[in-house]
Length: 281
Ligand code: AMP
Image (cartoon, rainbow, N blue to C red; front, side, top):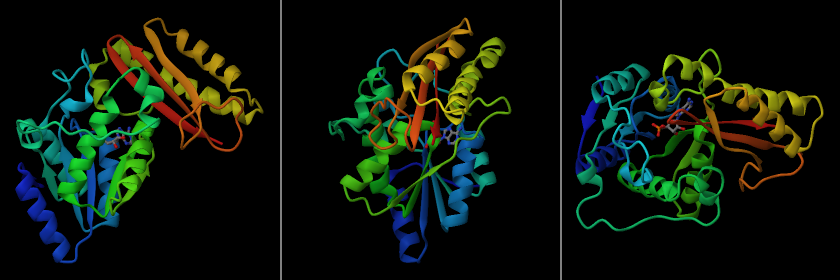
């Protein structure tokens, strides 16, 4: 069983001691309801570092009004077991009051990146993400931290924040883990009914289509996006938030595919908002 730590003080102390003993600290921040995607990050940390910390905290700051904070899936007991199975040493599971005590008013922000892609649909979301991630970095002081490409924009923003604010750590971004039909694993997939679950595979189909078009020589992103939209519209219950093809570091739209680009997509299936992406070159 992995150890469970609930207070900031104990968590800082644990990591401080581990460092003094010569350990390297690997850190995976999560919101829990763990699945194979999270497990892949934990396994990678197990290989590369000697103390592996997984935080489980549904961060109220990154949910905007009307989003699913209250119904976000929570399963701490199951998560603790999965962390141990993947080779994690410690679960850091603080309460909301522990991380945001009365009087907490500070936020971390960034120009540009947080306004792209999901930013338009989730105002304030990335401020919440950066604020919690910066706090967790200070508490855990990891040598390497692991993020999933599944949340591509988040990974780019965190990478930038860590560089800009001189966090002495390495941000590693790991590949997207998928279900057999291609749906990217996500804690939110549990919200999907059987029909919606089938429909949800349309995100991956549209990304594969984009890859195929580029391979066949198509360079116009407007045309590629047009085909991707058509693919999604074949599914009745699917509503597109955005489909963009962007530059990998600035996340700004590109007109022609040239070198590496990222096709990023957000679609609502019923009330569930799903995101996915593919790096195409
Ligand atoms: P979350 O619990 O959704 O905040 O995710 C915690 C971390 O796991 C983030 O860095 C995610 O990008 C990553 N993650 C979530 N789903 C996947 C997936 N299907 N494949 C790889 N990483 C993932």
